[in-house]
Picture (cartoon, rainbow, N blue to C red):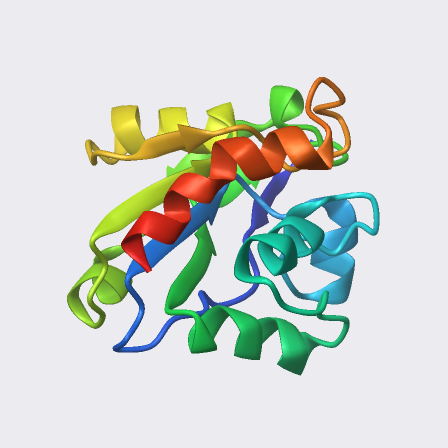
Amino acid sequence: MREIKHGFEPVFDEDSKILILGSFPSLKSREMGFYYGHPQNRFWKLLAKLLDREVPNTLDEKKELLLRNKIALYDAVSTAIIEGSMDRDLEVVKASDLQNILYSSNIVKIFCNGNKSYLTVTKEMKLEAVKLPSTSAANARYSLDDLYEAWKIILEYL
């Protein structure tokens, strides 16, 4: 296995109020060059449901959904050793540098999409964050409705 660099930029602007951090892009996301690219990941469906919007399909629609709703999006890990896409197989080589996001926006709360992201943020970056259940299809314990109930906390900060 070899080290893999993250490969794409965070999505945020000066109006962003919350930061959602995944762990590291899946193989499908790396191929597509954008976050949550695997069609079975429920991130975009969940976000659309939370915000009462249509599910975005294109890259531009996804960015617009995030920015219009003051949401910044990135991953906690910038360099990793990983075979495939599963967080359990992810070895953190380097945590992401969040300074540009945190100092160039109005972030009031950080939310982590899953445990690997949360552990990276709280243990390696020493930042406070809220751990939310992963939107990955591998997290089969949570239905979309269960995810909605857990994730609706983000709405308090938007």
